[in-house]
Length: 276
Image (cartoon, rainbow, N blue to C red; front, side, top):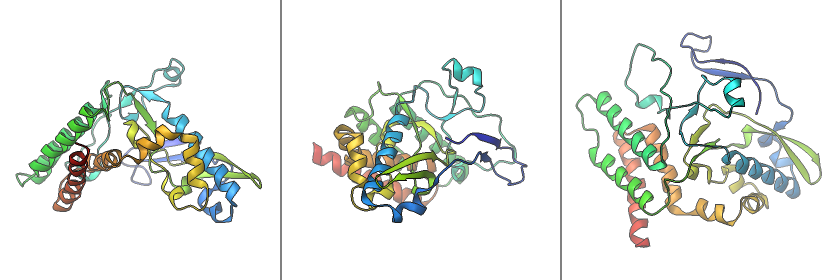
Protein backbone atom coordinates (compact mmCIF):
# COMPACT_ATOMS: atom_id res chain seq x y z
CA UNK A 1 0.00 0.00 0.00
CA UNK A 2 1.22 3.52 -0.71
CA UNK A 3 1.87 5.82 2.23
CA UNK A 4 -0.76 8.53 2.69
CA UNK A 5 0.63 12.07 2.55
CA UNK A 6 -2.63 14.04 2.75
CA UNK A 7 -6.21 13.02 3.48
CA UNK A 8 -8.91 15.67 3.31
CA UNK A 9 -12.62 14.91 3.63
CA UNK A 10 -13.69 18.43 4.55
CA UNK A 11 -16.56 19.95 2.49
CA UNK A 12 -14.57 23.06 1.51
CA UNK A 13 -11.28 21.66 0.19
CA UNK A 14 -9.87 22.56 -3.22
CA UNK A 15 -11.46 19.57 -4.98
CA UNK A 16 -14.86 19.97 -3.30
CA UNK A 17 -14.83 16.26 -2.45
CA UNK A 18 -12.86 13.89 -0.21
CA UNK A 19 -9.42 12.98 -1.57
CA UNK A 20 -6.25 11.12 -0.63
CA UNK A 21 -2.73 11.98 -1.84
CA UNK A 22 -0.26 9.07 -1.76
CA UNK A 23 3.47 8.75 -2.14
CA UNK A 24 4.41 7.42 -5.58
CA UNK A 25 5.18 3.71 -5.67
CA UNK A 26 7.58 1.98 -8.08
CA UNK A 27 6.32 0.02 -11.05
CA UNK A 28 3.91 0.50 -13.92
CA UNK A 29 0.21 -0.12 -14.32
CA UNK A 30 -0.54 -3.76 -15.05
CA UNK A 31 -3.14 -2.59 -17.56
CA UNK A 32 -0.51 -0.74 -19.59
CA UNK A 33 1.84 -3.76 -19.62
CA UNK A 34 -0.57 -6.70 -19.89
CA UNK A 35 -0.62 -6.86 -23.69
CA UNK A 36 3.19 -7.00 -23.77
CA UNK A 37 3.54 -9.85 -21.26
CA UNK A 38 4.17 -13.43 -22.33
CA UNK A 39 2.17 -16.34 -20.91
CA UNK A 40 4.65 -17.09 -18.12
CA UNK A 41 4.72 -13.44 -17.05
CA UNK A 42 0.92 -13.23 -17.00
CA UNK A 43 0.76 -16.37 -14.88
CA UNK A 44 3.33 -14.91 -12.52
CA UNK A 45 1.34 -11.68 -12.17
CA UNK A 46 -1.88 -13.65 -11.57
CA UNK A 47 -0.21 -15.69 -8.81
CA UNK A 48 1.06 -12.52 -7.16
CA UNK A 49 -2.44 -11.02 -7.23
CA UNK A 50 -3.86 -14.25 -5.78
CA UNK A 51 -1.37 -14.15 -2.89
CA UNK A 52 -2.31 -10.54 -2.24
CA UNK A 53 -6.03 -11.36 -2.32
CA UNK A 54 -5.61 -14.35 0.00
CA UNK A 55 -3.40 -12.52 2.49
CA UNK A 56 -5.70 -9.49 2.60
CA UNK A 57 -8.71 -11.69 3.36
CA UNK A 58 -6.94 -13.03 6.47
CA UNK A 59 -7.22 -9.60 8.13
CA UNK A 60 -10.44 -9.97 10.09
CA UNK A 61 -12.74 -7.94 12.29
CA UNK A 62 -16.00 -8.69 14.08
CA UNK A 63 -17.09 -5.13 13.26
CA UNK A 64 -18.06 -4.39 9.63
CA UNK A 65 -17.36 -1.07 7.95
CA UNK A 66 -14.59 1.40 7.12
CA UNK A 67 -11.38 1.73 9.13
CA UNK A 68 -11.87 4.94 11.09
CA UNK A 69 -9.68 8.02 10.82
CA UNK A 70 -9.95 8.12 14.61
CA UNK A 71 -7.39 5.31 14.85
CA UNK A 72 -3.90 6.23 15.99
CA UNK A 73 -0.53 4.56 15.55
CA UNK A 74 -0.74 3.57 19.21
CA UNK A 75 -4.08 1.83 18.53
CA UNK A 76 -2.61 -0.22 15.71
CA UNK A 77 0.38 -1.23 17.84
CA UNK A 78 -2.09 -2.52 20.42
CA UNK A 79 -4.01 -4.43 17.71
CA UNK A 80 -6.98 -2.10 18.19
CA UNK A 81 -8.77 -1.09 14.99
CA UNK A 82 -11.78 1.20 15.22
CA UNK A 83 -14.27 0.63 12.41
CA UNK A 84 -17.00 3.05 11.33
CA UNK A 85 -20.49 2.01 10.28
CA UNK A 86 -20.80 0.70 6.72
CA UNK A 87 -21.49 3.75 4.52
CA UNK A 88 -24.38 3.86 2.08
CA UNK A 89 -24.25 5.33 -1.41
CA UNK A 90 -24.67 9.12 -1.33
CA UNK A 91 -27.39 8.94 -3.97
CA UNK A 92 -29.75 7.19 -1.56
CA UNK A 93 -29.28 9.46 1.45
CA UNK A 94 -31.71 12.26 2.28
CA UNK A 95 -30.52 15.68 1.11
CA UNK A 96 -29.20 17.85 3.90
CA UNK A 97 -27.48 21.22 4.08
CA UNK A 98 -25.53 20.41 7.22
CA UNK A 99 -22.56 18.12 7.59
CA UNK A 100 -22.91 15.33 10.09
CA UNK A 101 -20.42 14.55 12.79
CA UNK A 102 -18.03 11.66 12.40
CA UNK A 103 -19.80 8.42 11.44
CA UNK A 104 -20.88 6.05 14.16
CA UNK A 105 -18.39 3.43 15.22
CA UNK A 106 -19.49 -0.08 14.31
CA UNK A 107 -20.06 -2.78 16.88
CA UNK A 108 -19.69 -6.55 16.51
CA UNK A 109 -22.25 -8.09 14.17
CA UNK A 110 -22.87 -11.22 12.15
CA UNK A 111 -23.11 -11.11 8.36
CA UNK A 112 -26.85 -11.70 8.55
CA UNK A 113 -27.23 -8.81 11.02
CA UNK A 114 -25.18 -6.52 8.76
CA UNK A 115 -27.25 -7.28 5.65
CA UNK A 116 -30.51 -6.81 7.54
CA UNK A 117 -29.19 -3.55 9.03
CA UNK A 118 -28.28 -2.20 5.58
CA UNK A 119 -31.74 -3.13 4.30
CA UNK A 120 -33.43 -1.38 7.24
CA UNK A 121 -31.35 1.78 6.79
CA UNK A 122 -32.01 1.90 3.05
CA UNK A 123 -35.70 1.29 3.58
CA UNK A 124 -35.82 4.19 6.03
CA UNK A 125 -33.85 6.47 3.69
CA UNK A 126 -36.15 5.66 0.79
CA UNK A 127 -39.16 6.66 2.88
CA UNK A 128 -37.57 10.02 3.73
CA UNK A 129 -36.47 10.75 0.17
CA UNK A 130 -39.68 9.78 -1.58
CA UNK A 131 -41.90 11.72 0.82
CA UNK A 132 -44.90 9.45 0.84
CA UNK A 133 -44.42 7.86 -2.57
CA UNK A 134 -44.27 4.03 -2.82
CA UNK A 135 -41.04 2.68 -1.34
CA UNK A 136 -41.28 -0.77 -2.96
CA UNK A 137 -42.13 -2.56 0.29
CA UNK A 138 -42.45 -5.92 -1.45
CA UNK A 139 -38.83 -5.67 -2.61
CA UNK A 140 -37.55 -5.10 0.92
CA UNK A 141 -39.62 -7.99 2.24
CA UNK A 142 -38.22 -10.32 -0.42
CA UNK A 143 -34.67 -9.14 0.29
CA UNK A 144 -35.10 -10.01 3.94
CA UNK A 145 -36.28 -13.44 2.85
CA UNK A 146 -33.18 -13.90 0.67
CA UNK A 147 -30.88 -12.91 3.55
CA UNK A 148 -32.63 -15.33 5.90
CA UNK A 149 -32.35 -18.13 3.33
CA UNK A 150 -28.61 -17.52 2.85
CA UNK A 151 -28.22 -17.70 6.61
CA UNK A 152 -30.39 -20.80 7.03
CA UNK A 153 -28.40 -22.64 4.37
CA UNK A 154 -25.11 -21.86 6.12
CA UNK A 155 -23.82 -19.59 3.36
CA UNK A 156 -23.41 -16.60 5.71
CA UNK A 157 -22.60 -18.31 9.02
CA UNK A 158 -22.67 -16.38 12.31
CA UNK A 159 -19.20 -17.69 13.16
CA UNK A 160 -17.56 -15.95 10.21
CA UNK A 161 -15.78 -12.65 10.90
CA UNK A 162 -15.57 -9.86 8.32
CA UNK A 163 -12.57 -9.71 5.97
CA UNK A 164 -10.67 -6.64 4.84
CA UNK A 165 -11.74 -6.24 1.23
CA UNK A 166 -10.34 -4.40 -1.74
CA UNK A 167 -13.21 -5.25 -4.09
CA UNK A 168 -13.46 -4.78 -7.86
CA UNK A 169 -9.70 -4.83 -8.33
CA UNK A 170 -8.87 -3.49 -11.80
CA UNK A 171 -5.65 -3.99 -13.74
CA UNK A 172 -5.12 -0.23 -13.62
CA UNK A 173 -5.03 -0.40 -9.80
CA UNK A 174 -2.11 -2.86 -9.75
CA UNK A 175 1.49 -1.70 -10.14
CA UNK A 176 3.98 -4.27 -11.36
CA UNK A 177 7.64 -4.63 -12.27
CA UNK A 178 8.89 -7.16 -14.82
CA UNK A 179 11.86 -9.00 -13.34
CA UNK A 180 12.61 -11.46 -16.15
CA UNK A 181 11.00 -13.53 -18.91
CA UNK A 182 8.98 -15.56 -16.41
CA UNK A 183 8.53 -13.32 -13.38
CA UNK A 184 6.41 -10.25 -12.66
CA UNK A 185 6.41 -8.65 -9.20
CA UNK A 186 3.47 -6.68 -7.81
CA UNK A 187 4.94 -3.48 -6.35
CA UNK A 188 1.76 -1.81 -5.18
CA UNK A 189 -2.02 -1.72 -5.15
CA UNK A 190 -3.82 1.62 -5.52
CA UNK A 191 -7.32 3.02 -4.87
CA UNK A 192 -8.00 2.01 -1.29
CA UNK A 193 -10.80 4.53 -0.75
CA UNK A 194 -13.46 1.83 -0.92
CA UNK A 195 -11.71 -0.73 1.30
CA UNK A 196 -13.97 -2.11 4.03
CA UNK A 197 -14.31 -4.94 6.48
CA UNK A 198 -17.15 -6.78 4.79
CA UNK A 199 -18.71 -10.21 4.24
CA UNK A 200 -16.19 -12.80 3.11
CA UNK A 201 -18.29 -13.71 0.06
CA UNK A 202 -17.43 -10.31 -1.43
CA UNK A 203 -13.76 -11.27 -1.58
CA UNK A 204 -14.45 -14.59 -3.27
CA UNK A 205 -14.45 -13.40 -6.85
CA UNK A 206 -11.84 -13.43 -9.57
CA UNK A 207 -10.65 -9.98 -10.75
CA UNK A 208 -12.50 -9.24 -13.96
CA UNK A 209 -9.40 -8.60 -16.05
CA UNK A 210 -8.21 -12.19 -15.46
CA UNK A 211 -11.41 -13.71 -16.85
CA UNK A 212 -10.54 -12.72 -20.40
CA UNK A 213 -6.90 -11.87 -19.94
CA UNK A 214 -5.25 -14.48 -22.11
CA UNK A 215 -3.92 -18.00 -21.60
CA UNK A 216 -2.94 -19.13 -18.12
CA UNK A 217 -3.79 -16.14 -15.96
CA UNK A 218 -7.08 -17.39 -14.59
CA UNK A 219 -5.76 -20.91 -14.02
CA UNK A 220 -2.71 -19.60 -12.14
CA UNK A 221 -4.91 -17.40 -9.93
CA UNK A 222 -7.29 -20.25 -9.09
CA UNK A 223 -4.43 -22.64 -8.39
CA UNK A 224 -3.14 -20.37 -5.63
CA UNK A 225 -6.60 -19.70 -4.19
CA UNK A 226 -7.42 -23.41 -3.95
CA UNK A 227 -10.31 -25.66 -4.83
CA UNK A 228 -12.50 -24.77 -1.84
CA UNK A 229 -12.20 -21.02 -2.52
CA UNK A 230 -13.05 -21.55 -6.20
CA UNK A 231 -16.08 -23.70 -5.42
CA UNK A 232 -17.53 -20.96 -3.22
CA UNK A 233 -16.60 -18.20 -5.67
CA UNK A 234 -18.37 -19.99 -8.54
CA UNK A 235 -21.48 -20.89 -6.56
CA UNK A 236 -24.47 -19.08 -8.06
CA UNK A 237 -25.95 -18.18 -4.67
CA UNK A 238 -22.75 -16.34 -3.79
CA UNK A 239 -22.74 -14.40 -7.05
CA UNK A 240 -26.32 -13.37 -6.35
CA UNK A 241 -25.34 -12.43 -2.78
CA UNK A 242 -22.66 -10.13 -4.23
CA UNK A 243 -25.27 -8.53 -6.49
CA UNK A 244 -27.59 -8.15 -3.52
CA UNK A 245 -24.78 -6.33 -1.73
CA UNK A 246 -24.70 -3.69 -4.46
CA UNK A 247 -28.44 -3.20 -4.09
CA UNK A 248 -28.07 -2.82 -0.33
CA UNK A 249 -25.37 -0.17 -0.75
CA UNK A 250 -27.12 1.76 -3.53
CA UNK A 251 -30.69 1.53 -2.26
CA UNK A 252 -34.03 1.23 -4.05
CA UNK A 253 -35.30 4.73 -4.79
CA UNK A 254 -36.57 4.38 -8.36
CA UNK A 255 -38.40 1.97 -10.63
CA UNK A 256 -35.14 0.92 -12.29
CA UNK A 257 -33.61 0.22 -8.87
CA UNK A 258 -36.60 -1.97 -7.99
CA UNK A 259 -36.33 -3.79 -11.32
CA UNK A 260 -32.62 -4.53 -10.76
CA UNK A 261 -33.32 -5.79 -7.23
CA UNK A 262 -36.17 -8.02 -8.42
CA UNK A 263 -33.92 -9.56 -11.07
CA UNK A 264 -31.56 -10.70 -8.33
CA UNK A 265 -34.40 -11.93 -6.15
CA UNK A 266 -36.10 -13.82 -9.01
CA UNK A 267 -32.86 -15.60 -9.91
CA UNK A 268 -32.15 -16.46 -6.29
CA UNK A 269 -35.61 -17.90 -5.73
CA UNK A 270 -35.25 -20.07 -8.84
CA UNK A 271 -31.92 -21.40 -7.56
CA UNK A 272 -33.44 -22.19 -4.18
CA UNK A 273 -36.29 -24.10 -5.84
CA UNK A 274 -33.81 -26.16 -7.89
CA UNK A 275 -31.63 -26.91 -4.84
CA UNK A 276 -34.67 -28.09 -2.90
